[in-house]
Length: 185
Image 1: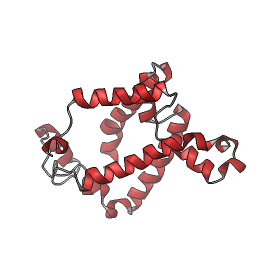
Image 2: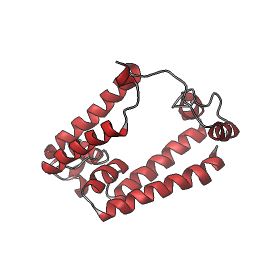
Image 3: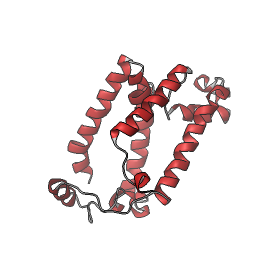
């Protein structure tokens, strides 16, 4: 059981991802989470009003099972397989996060300053969720897929647009954490 509670090394998880990607490519499937929103909208009848949602959603049922698996897997990982130990962070990281107003740095992956209900239902929290949700939705549609789709499927099938998108994701993340995040918090 201890093996399950610890992070898996790259030489175990990497080949597992590679095998799954090989099988998906072999069977002509692509992996990505954002396409499921289109599928759910098509199931709900949005294809009657918007042409983008008018497609054969039944061919994408398998991908909805991936989403269900991610939800169930996340629940199992959190409630049954969590290892409640403090994270070993560098002193510079602890100092930076403390200066940004985080308490008890390294004791949780979800700091309450960001992930508590009080933080979510504040004006600032709701504004960040609405603006962030719009930007993620717009960016996903504009980029032709989500981060997981481009980084896993797109790079596995050697697609240049996916490489450009992944570079953009990393640059956006660096800009956010080093320039915008300190201003917001």
